[in-house]
Picture 1: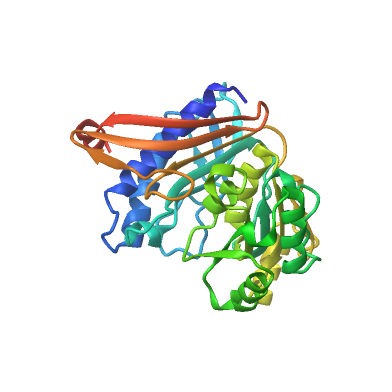
Picture 2 (picture 1 turned 30 degrees about the horizontal axis):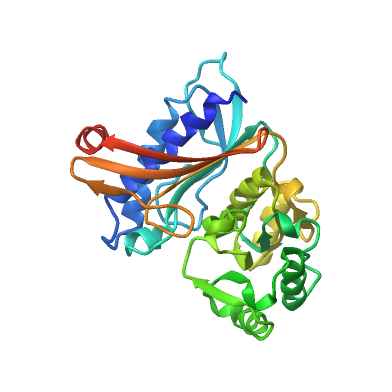
Amino acid sequence: MDRTLVLEYTRVTEAAAIAASTMIGRGDRNGADAAAVRAMREAFERVAARGTIVIGEGERDEAPMLYIGEKVGPSDPALPEVDIAVDPLEGTNLCANGLPGAITVLAVTDRGLLLNAPDCYMMKIACGPEGRGKISLSKSPRDNLYTLAAAKGRRPDELTVVVLDRPRHENLVTELREAGARIHLITDGDVAPVVATCIPKSGIDMVYGIGGAPEGVLGAAAIHCMGGEFVGKLVFRSDEERQRAIAMGHKDPDRVFGVDDLVRGDVIFVATGVTGGPLLKGVRRIGDRMHLQSLAIRSKTGTIRWVDTSVDALRFLSEH
């Protein structure tokens, strides 16, 4: 993929973030998602690549979506073809309620290099490069915590683990706390914390627990770019979900996925903050300008870019 696509896809997440920011705190999660989807879909048309959405918003959301199989971008046959995983607004509830951590996010690869994740749950563990090859779903939470602490040269009680605040995680949280971990519970949006495990200044060491499988692939794309570790296993709530996964080509729906099983090759990962969090600043309106912060990563070069953008608010909002 051409390196210029990094900036072009950053403009896509920026457009979605600005659109979503108009809905911050309004209590309308579907309205916020719809605004981000519209802006992102329009922005894709200005990117010099023919994209296919292979991971969309997730069919659980009762909202407009960039759906699996949708073609985005110009139809010019001379342009390169890419696969795209996307969440136009990761953390719709966070945006609607004015809470930290909402982002717009996408990952791009050459064709056929992203796992086609079914719309189900995934048990996942993510951490930075120190844990590469050391953490495992076959180990207990306590053992994984101790293993990562040893790899980082720190005590277990110095590590912060992010867990989605759900009843299904009560035992997990108890075990991690008893092992000494500092638990940071989040209500929604586990992609940003997964990415943050590879950013030392974020203060997040590990993400643990069950979340969305499509979000798992998005997080793994960033982990792939930064040399961190991610392991996951699909979790099905019904036999219907299992059969759907098999129909999508998952011959062994119970397999454990590593980073290289979820995403391969040259990867571009981009995220823009909507509401401020540990990874990115949110969209800020100061006078007649809007200020954004994005993270743009490319695996081929290992480049991590923090992109601070200022746009003319009145012009941008009138166009979108």
